[in-house]
Amino acid sequence: MIVIGLMSGTSADGVDVAICDIRGHPGDMRVELLCGAAFAYEREMRERILASCDPKSSRVHQIADLHVDLASVFADCTIAALDQAGMSAGQVDLIGSHGQTLWHNVLPSGQVNVSFQVVEAAVLAERTGITAISNFRARDIAAGGQGAPLTSFVDWLLLRHPTHWRAVQNIGGMGNVTFLPPLSDEASAPIAFDTGPGNALLDIAVTQISRGAMTYDRDSHYARQGRVNEEWLEALLGHPYYERDYPKTTGRETFGTAAALSLISEARSRGLENAEIIATLTALTASNIADAYRRFAPAPIREVILGGGGRHNPVMVGMLSELLAPANVLTHEDIGMDSDFKEALVFAVLAYETWHNRPATLPVLTGARRASVLGSITPGANYVDLLRSTWL
Ligand SMILES: Nc1ncnc2c1ncn2[C@@H]1O[C@H](COP(=O)(O)OP(=O)(O)O)[C@@H](O)[C@H]1O
Ligand SMILES: [Mg+2]
Image 1 (cartoon, rainbow, N blue to C red):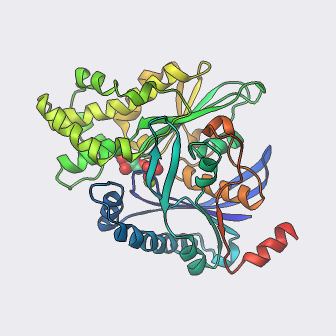
Image 2 (cartoon, rainbow, N blue to C red):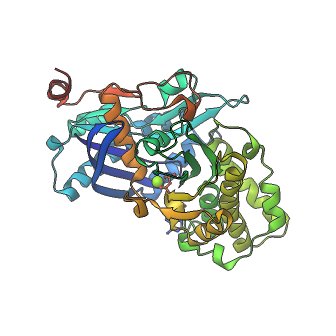
Image 3 (spheres, rainbow, N blue to C red):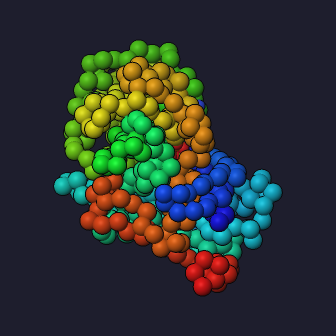
């Protein structure tokens, strides 16, 4: 099947499109990335998304507009990616669209009662003619799970090592990890959770410090000019999220704009300079990840497979490699997968599983009572043909 995965993460930096050829079934699945394309948001769209994520600035009519306007952007990106690939929409069977998370609500108990994504799938189906699957998190939450991390199921399907434990670490707006037992170990289960803030606090801090000239610390521009303030770092690592037991997930509600702005004023009152603030927030991400491994890894981790935009931040990756030694820090490329389009590819695989009426979570990963078939299906012009070729 040809399936397109569409992803915009908590960084709200842009849309990633993965056009995939997927065959087989769990246990014997082959996923080939035919084409990956990334489209950065225009500044105004990013600001609308970030404003809608913050209860102080969000307005219901603006969220409603965003729901359809962002869907148009997703549709444009899909069409542009097909164009880049020299393909037509008629060759595609399915779209799996994550949409854009605006609110992932973690209750004081640690349970998630709702994870709210916009991007109206009807617009995708209408504009492309392709059947679209969206709203992947809701069913797992209805079954008592966190609705996240969803990537970990695909890590479990595709990325286990024959003989040793691996950690698959994504560093997007938030960080999330999957600890994967080796294929030779049939008794152990994988573990997954959000490690905490990845780039989200950093991005806001850089935007603020550069007065909007930069929206992230490109190639560690600031971090490499400053020293880590160990005292502040230690205080930051005292956040109660880090010691909470898994399954656990987080988002911009806890580590977003409001938190970043208050951290900047805290840093200033401690007398930190700009580059020190950024260096310390960079260290916070590397340290909260290493901390999570120390606390929760069920076995010695031999390999860490890094993905997400954070792996382009050399200072962050350097710190992480040092903290995680002797584990070998690799990228997805080292094991034959594309790092930049991994998450978009994941949503293609999840859509493929849903279309085949197979559950695409493991209760052990999300904390749900049972494994669910995920998502909502919006029929496109190809719907009946698709039904016939798969099911009838
Ligand atoms: N060259 C780079 N240098 C430093 N950070 C980078 C670089 N490229 C990307 N990033 C970081 O990665 C983030 C995007 O990561 P991504 O994996 O797309 O996150 P999400 O899944 O949350 O959208 C950016 O906001 C930025 O913080
Ligand atoms: Mg992104």
